[in-house]
Image 1 (cartoon, one colour):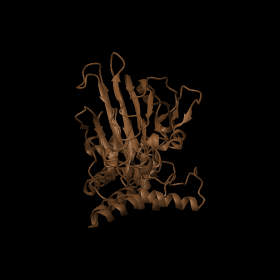
Image 2 (cartoon, one colour):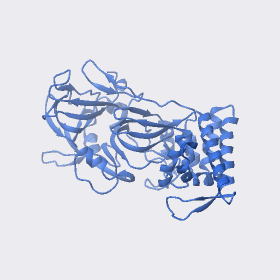
Image 3 (cartoon, rainbow, N blue to C red):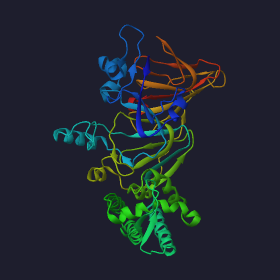
Length: 442
């Protein structure tokens, strides 16, 4: 078993306090967005050996002994197939979608042949893998996830139009509306007629087609083309703060996002998506093609080892609309929750329908667990473990490793079974990711 040092990724939407508070370490004063635990080549964890070989990147350690480190996952995946993160969002992430494996392979090859640099701002595919993912909420966690029923979205757009008409009636100038955005203290004139017409046109586009797929695709595409009507409508979002009970909650909630992304067409796109609030312990999964955006909160995120993201709003980064539309699944969807599966061994498992990973939450106190203060690690090949509370001890047939809050470890497939025990008076909490049992046939 190997103790790890992990990379913190800093993005503008990250929190300056959440990660440090969770892992009980000094805050950096910078927006710490993600802690990566895994072997992704962009930011592999570092193995902290206590012998003369010294620190070494986890992907290199695995490459040197793929069969011993990965077991059967070596033949199936060729590398560590999952990446575990702690995600800390203080501001909304971009609206985004992840490709299927086939789309990623084709796109990666196409961009390589075209000579697009790996770090280019307009690069869509950083690797050839898909990126299904799952998020386990550690705090209250708000997100957008999948297309909502189009009638609900049309109702919101009509309510927005009616509110703007009321504002026009109250204004001395019935053509323009004075809007104070987050980037200005001076009211800026917005064409109210154009905004009203655009809201109603989008509502009609959603409902007029008999095909759900066509209606969602056409509306989504029209919004992200960002024409003058869409820009006018998005620019009026700050006005909704004063609407009170005259508009649905979903419209008032736009004002918080508009403070970060004023005038962004993604504000309008967000109304097409289910808005959800996860409480601590609740979990959802996100398959390829699912349009989503994390808005606020801290969670354990697990995914296939990929960094492929196609963006669709709430961002200043590159948006390739044609490629984005080709990867989206245009159908209304329920929020895909993942319920805990409790095994006979007292293991709490979260198993989405993906072959690359499953998540185990380990919650131990010295005496108050069915197994008397210990639990067997659910291990279908290699695993990574992160302690988020207290102290725990990992015991395998050949070694022992004690981890405290903020510590993490990589466990090779060859080192099994592993028993997790309490190592302090308060017990501890940890999260462990391993290959899906469905993939290994266990």
